[in-house]
Amino acid sequence: MSDRSLLSPTGVDLAFTLLGLVAVGSALMVVTTRQIVHAALWLVVSLGAVAGCFLVMTAEFVAWMQVLIYLGAVVVLLLFGMMLTRAPIGVSDELSGTNRIAALFAALAIMTVLGVLIVDAFDSTMIDVEGQKSTASVIGESLFRYWVLPFEALSVLLLSALVGAIAISTSDEEA
Image 1 (cartoon, helix red, strand yellow):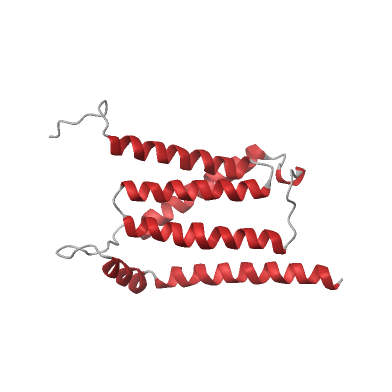
Image 2: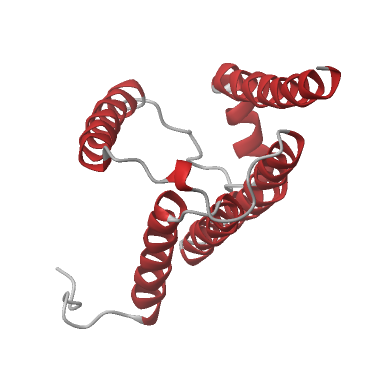
């Protein structure tokens, strides 16, 4: 039995908790702000805090992939998509809906269903690193051997979103 108790957290516990609170708070700001550019910047803060959580858990490879892929690529893609579609920059009344309660219940229901599906799908799937040092090559090999289909599906989804943004912006210019 451990001598540690919940009443005496370590510095790592406090750092992880603080980063988690920053991630959750900034994620709430992403969905509640009325300025779309501010929402994108709050998304940067949220994803950066998640990367910090990975660093605290000594998962440096995952943390740097979080920074490179999500902070570097996805947020830039989001900002370029906003620029290409001429999204409103300032305060927009269209971003505040009147059905917030219904949207909250729908979001909670979708989160619950997706959570159950993910836990059920990956319940018995584990990356076998026993006897091996958990290096980037072992993680990369497992990622591209077992999870290559979701990885490729995500890349096609992001590509189609960018193509759609370009098509929407060029159709306005031709009219």
